[in-house]
Image 1 (cartoon, rainbow, N blue to C red):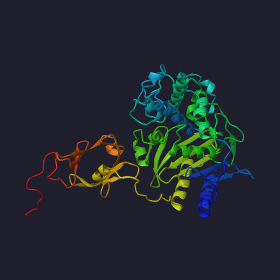
Image 2: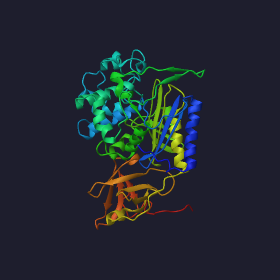
Image 3: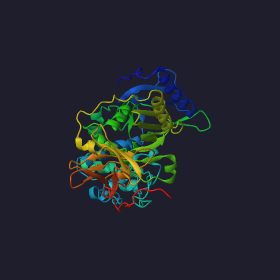
Image 4: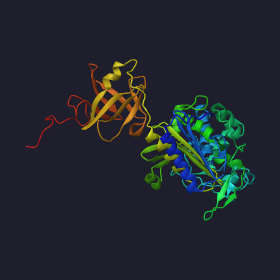
Amino acid sequence: MTTSQEELLPATRRALLHRIAVAQAEGRAPSLVATVVRGGRAVWHGARTSVDGHGPDENVQYRIGSITKTFTAVLVLRLRDEGLLDLGDPLEKHLPGTGAGEATVAELLAHTAGLAAESPGPWWERTPGSLRPELSDVLGEQPFLHPVGRRHHYSNPGYTLLGALVEELRGAPWEEVLRREVLEPLGLGRTSGAPQAPYAGGWAVHPWADAMLPEPLEDLGRMAPAGQLWSTTADLARFAAFLVAGDDRVLSAESLREMRTPAAPAEPADVLDGSTYGLGLQIQRRDGRLLVGHGGSLPGFLACLTISVDDDVAAVVLANCTSGPLTSAVAADLVRIVAEAEPRIPEPWRPLSQVDPAMLELAGQWYWGTHAFVLRVTADGLVSLGPLSGTGRRARFRANGDGTWTGLEGYYAGELLRPVRRPDGTLDHLDLGSFVFTRQPYDETSSVPGGVDPEGWRGIG
């Protein structure tokens, strides 16, 4: 992979290098590598290492831990898009006999299935996967800790079940399916289940002394879909670009937007932190911007991939230590540095190639009661409805082809927007899920539920 350093300004590149240098030094990481992605490709790579000489480049593998879950989620969404399952299906429909079959596919993806966070028995990340050869060994006798669907509780066994689901419906091992359906089409040739040279060794750094201990590198066996993979900053840069734009050979942009949409009820602490979870992707608000991606850790390794879709900037940070630098904070800072120093330049405004008179008739100012709203026709063929000023309910709407529109987000997601006409064909009002929007506040010439006082607007006197 050719990485262009020149696309970022020298001051930006120095700020990025400074941030990872501080992270490696203060976090006492044997090595730390990072990449920034902008416009769909890597534009910067940096590395810091405790070893004199050549530092690790963008093709050195590190273990990425739970970033693996996002790869597994992509496989599950592919099955959904092919019609082989529905996200609302209980697991039992496709993978019977697990003892956790009442949880739905979507609940497993969003960590709302109520399953335990970890597998019972010895610490699964530091012991051979052969100790857990069956799903029953991963789940234990009491897999559920919470009511299904009620709360977000991160679960590694849940993603083991999703990996088993992929194997059941594809009739092949999880890693083989992943390589054939995701890694090879996206050109992720340095992402694998087992390490492939050159790769970094995993280390534990003593908390109170500058001493190190090598960590064991275990094959996770059944737990592989939750955290097995090794990858590089170059491969994860390509994967980050895919998570934004999609690739019809793997997964559509629309399905990836679904993955990036919150799907889990947030805990009170999560509300305060501004974090939630989608379908295989973590979502957080940091420094005033929305970030999506995933973190990962296994003994000896830390990893984070994070994306600001609005800024068109992503960052990958990998380190080979059990604890130390906060890779999620470093990755978020790398995104912030680029987004603030070199903000995205918007595409030039261009008029529509053609204008639908029926859409123009809807455009303009509307009132819901006394609240002023404006409906705009957007360049992508949608219409948007939002407050004329300040905050309030807003949404985009997609045409249904019959003169009605369906809400795409927020309070009005899935709700029907219907223009209502008078007998002479002129536009009377908009009906949005029974709410009436009129051209004037409580327009006496329109059909307003409850009617309009015949004496009209008045003062006090």
